[in-house]
Length: 109
Length: 125
View: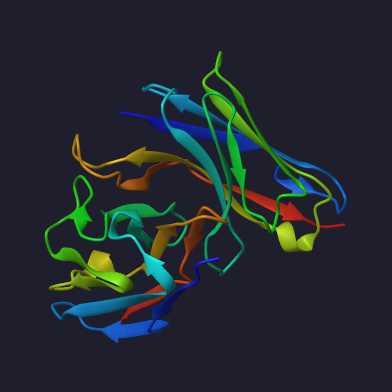
């Protein structure tokens, strides 16, 4: 099983600042099979990034993804008030076919 | 635009069987994988399993002995059954559609880009 470890667990920043969220895999993951999601309280997750670096439809360009192998990053260039939420990385592997990281909570400082 | 609408019992007693259904509206049911994902209160996301239109399934090994996912293509619906539930199965359950978002002719880039609204299931005696 491929384990995804996200860091930090909680990130406290102010609007306008840059956010850098990390996702580290226990084994190499194909970049094509790495996605990022945003989840706000009481809502279903929303797809932000697929294929490690491609933005989903309607996602602002302040969100970007990068990385390869075992280290992936989600960057939010200038935080807007609506960006404060929990973020999950997710990968497609073998068994189980899908795993998620434990999440990073992005909170207002 | 594809939409997922899910429903099912929200309160169960220990040892009962959880049963949820997800209906697909506004798009093709064939050619995709359809998943169930759950989230215990205050915790992260756990993938339960998936099915395609022909009934081919993959399950999370941690739940495999208790999970059955089935499909009804005539109704564009898929369902989850989880047997012998305990308090540890208390969670919000989501159905989700996995699509390959890659450009034609390039390597697959799958992701869950459509989600149901979620169903809170509580297991309590």
